[in-house]
Length: 150
Image 1 (cartoon, one colour):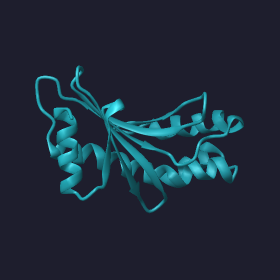
Image 2 (cartoon, one colour):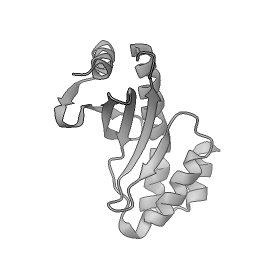
Image 3 (cartoon, one colour):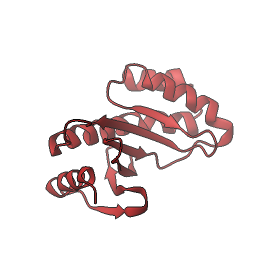
């Protein structure tokens, strides 16, 4: 493994997160169960760039006919977020939350990994009800954001 992934693995072990190595992607795979859902997460190292990226993959994809509405919801959600952002792949509807850090000329520590990982999964968990309401309850994106952010 790379130095970045070694640090991430040390955090996962210390915090008792089960994970598996995905050598072909230079990544670790884990999962998270929050108050509002359960999903897969990926911790990816970009060694040459000295970057760590953490993704929460939403357990549902936006159907093609709902992608514009979901894009509006995610754009509204992203406004004001300080650590990370939501993304959606318009080709298949995959929704994910990404947080990252560049550690060039420094080093990644387990404390930094913890901050990035928890900010990520707690944000996905916070916005999951809105994603579901937009996709399955025909709620307007602005209304779903208001419900979450108050």
